[in-house]
Image (cartoon, rainbow, N blue to C red; front, side):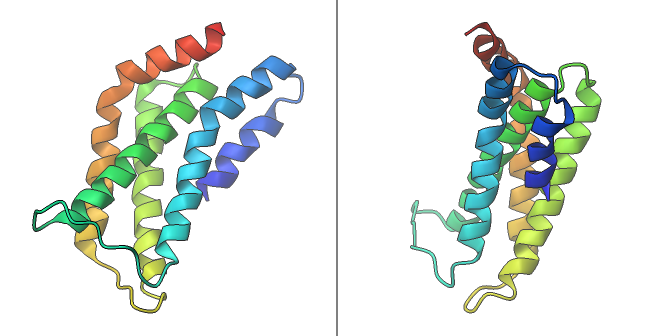
Amino acid sequence: MEIWMIMTIYWTDMTMNKQNFYIRLILSSPAIIISVALFWLSNQPQLPHIDFGVEWTDKMLHFIAYFCFGFSLTLAFKGNFPSWSLRKIILIVISIGLIYGISDEIHQSFVPNRTADIFDWLADATGVTVSLSLLKIINLIIKKIRKN
């Protein structure tokens, strides 16, 4: 769902110049790539086992993946819609992250050898929410991209 929302950014302003198009593409590409990767991973009947030597390795991986997803969504929306309030961006990012996480778990319930798990979704939600703590870094990245 959010892929289409992000992609429509490019066609909503037909008067933008080529440089603005490339800036928008750079700011939005990570969110598009990560959402596609998350979907692809969810569709795999079996994933390689990664062991960090702790009991909750699976939840840590969910947290990390959705932390990156939340960061990339924030970069896309903050960079493409600078006039939007911070509150609006936070609500949109959290909403997309929560909905995508739920749809990811539902999707996994239809994949052979996979199950839906509420604790995976909680790890997803926590990752997206914690990623918003990096808004200052995101602002610096956007300024650097816009200068070049």
